[in-house]
Amino acid sequence: MKVLFPVLLFCSGWIFSQKTVPSDFKKIPEILDNTELLYPFIVPDKKYEYWSVLRNNPDPDKAIIYESQMPDLMTLNDPAPEKGFFQKCLGENCFSYVLACEKSRSKYFSNEQQLRDFIGFVDNLPEAILIANTFGYSVDSANQLGSSYKIDNQHISLYLSKSKNGSETKKSFFIKINRKTGKLEVKSNGFY
Image (cartoon, rainbow, N blue to C red; front, side, top):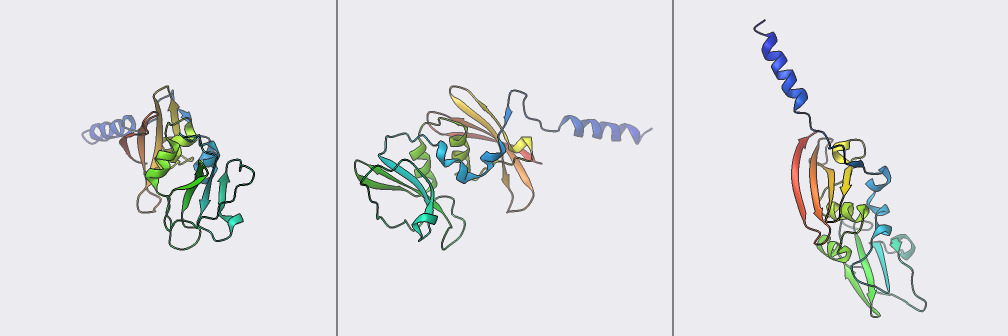
């Protein structure tokens, strides 16, 4: 009897301390866990004649991840920047960058902050996920604590994850993104 009470107390504490996502949050569609599929949903803060998302690849056809409608009679021959956002390695196909044309002049967005500036006002869920990605958070479609969202007029709230040192151990985070400023409020929910 002396052992049973502490065991029951421990088990009830463990069960009631399990983290859950509030019922007003929806599951993030599985397709949005791939960063490259988020770019078509970007609504840039400024009006550009043309913009594209590229990876550092010397073959122009393989470099294009996404491009907006290219205007007639436009040729862009700018070299790729040496660094970009979502840097994975050194060499080819290791990072991405945005090339935009404004007033017939090309402009690069080649780091995480510049990508956030390019996005500006957070119009939709894919933009919110991209912004969170620039801070190292990602969608874990296998778990609701790493793949949930809620949108209101001023914020997009997300439950996303972060892997610890590339291992299978993941930590859940509640992220609230101000749609106007793109600023994040982050709260850890612990490992799952």
